Image (tube, rainbow, N blue to C red; front, side, top):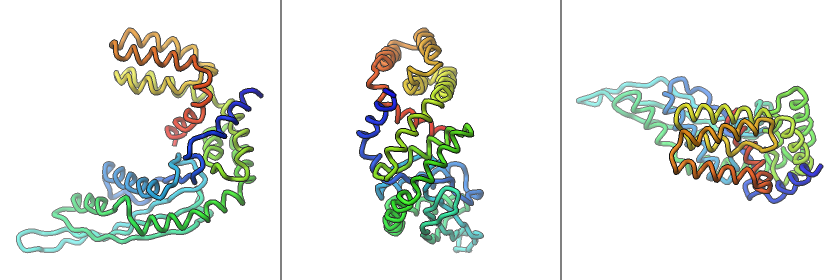
Length: 292
């Protein structure tokens, strides 16, 4: 009971992002014609557009998000005197919808035409032509805010019930995501906080084991900062905390003086009960970002 009360208190004084409207950016549809780097650049642009409107970034399991789709038409080759020019026409569609697509709040489409010396350069220019402060997309996303707020207010009880069903069937990651991404000003936020604390307690040991694997993998690659970052997110109440402590001591034999100072700071951080309580939300957020 004490832990739940402490956790609820922490959530009540969460930073400002928790009071914003969460907005996931789901995987982009129809990117088969893009390279991995081009698809990542496009996704980064879309995340920038969403962030610039003031939505809170979230994981891909959020109940509401942007579903991007890129429609690229057949390239055309035009003879331009001394050389050929490749021209591409494309449409970028942003749909604001419920995760499963059963509810679509609205969509906005923007067309692009770019030309370059070859197809790959044309695709790169097409992505570069999409500004992260695109006025049309930003205006559209701003218009969606009242609809999203109403959705959460009207469906709070259903979201809590859905999270409980997921937790009861051991889908803890999805349950945590559903609860985490209910806006701070929703009518059921207090109930979501209590339910979140309970689900987290159930899944805490699994999170710890995953973080330990991340730390061990990072250490094997001699990426000590990444190892320390994973260890920092381990809750001292987890069942694998003793293993994390032992692993931290083993790291001392592999790292230089600067990293040993980081490990000393990590040990002191674990000792701070208040710091762990305040980091509980960050632990869940980091975990959800990893699994989605």
